[in-house]
Each structure stands twice: as C-alpha cells, then as structure tokens.
Length: 70
Length: 136
Image 1 (cartoon, chains in turn red, blue):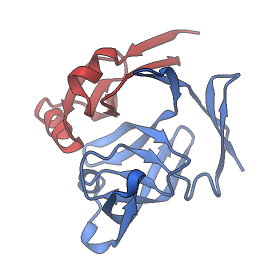
Image 2 (cartoon, helix red, strand yellow):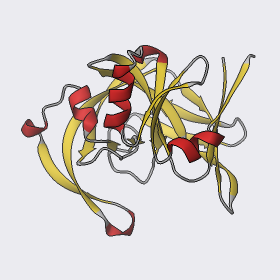
Image 3 (cartoon, one colour):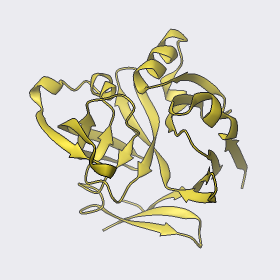
Image 4 (cartoon, chains in turn blue, purple):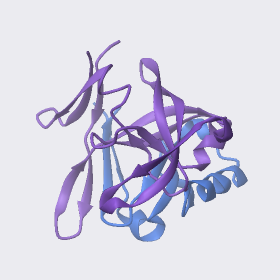
C-alpha cells in the first residue's frame, strides 16, 4: 500500500495556535489564520478550491504527524 | 452502514513525547463547497462542537437557534447555540445535534450525542493503529 506522511513539526511554531488549510494531495499549507475566520478569508482571497484541502486546528504545543495509506 | 476506519495520528507533547491523537477527517457542506475538516474524536464532549464562524459557512442562522452555555476544563464558560449539522462520512451522511460556540478559536470536536450513543461504537484499536467506527 502507498504510504504518505505529513508532518506539522514546523507548523506549530509558525501557525499555532490557529487554523490551516492544507492540500490533501501535497500536504502544503495553502491558507492559515489565528482563528477559523481569518484562515477562511485567507483561503478565499487566494481562491483556494475547498474541495481539495483539509482544514485543521493547529495546537500551540507539540507537533502533529499524519500517516495514512492510499 | 459499513465499519469506518481512520488511521492513528500522533502528536509530540513537550516533556511527554509522542502520543496518539484521535483526529479524523469529516466532510461538511459549506457555502464554498464540500470541504474536509479534521475533527478531534472527543469522548468527553457531549456535543459535536464548531467555532462561531462555521455557522455562516454552513448556512445556519443563529438567531433562530436555541442558546445555551458550555463549560470546559477549569470551569471556563462559553455561550453556545444548539444546531443540527450534516456530517458527511465516507459511506454515510448523518445529521447530528451540535454546538456552535461564541468564538472562532474553538477546535472541531466530535462529540457523543447522535454518534457514540446511537449510531456507532468507537474503538481505538492499538493493534490495528486505527480508530474504528462500528455501526451498532
């Protein structure tokens, strides 16, 4: 099975606490904000396709690693 | 309904180390189209909870909804509205009662009402490293 990995190690320091919209395919953060409203406005400003992102709360402490199998 | 499986995700907490964090992606239909949101599977939460801004994104008029108060860790209180939200799961769509808070920093929480109590059992399988939603 194909394995993808994504790490939020750097995102905690840069975006936490807050919200990010990251590409489901690449894992790249496409929009961010200190709260959901600011993140959403950033995403709309950048004309992001909401069907291709995952919106996630980013905590302040620690890091978040995602592993899933495609 | 079929069994749903979501792979484990992990956080690293200072002085604690790597820990399993129960986060799963769930779709919601918004005014910008269907999008995925990472929800924290929170067995301690009565209701599925969303931040205030999501009301407008989901087309919910809060002036028509019942107001309440939610209390969290340490006794802090926040104004809430009781709403209904459609959760789009991989093979199913469920309407659950949910709470929208009065502020925009609330994380997305998946609560027990209309999910754990009536529809699914939640199994955190360490052997399979998956969160399994098994229909009751």
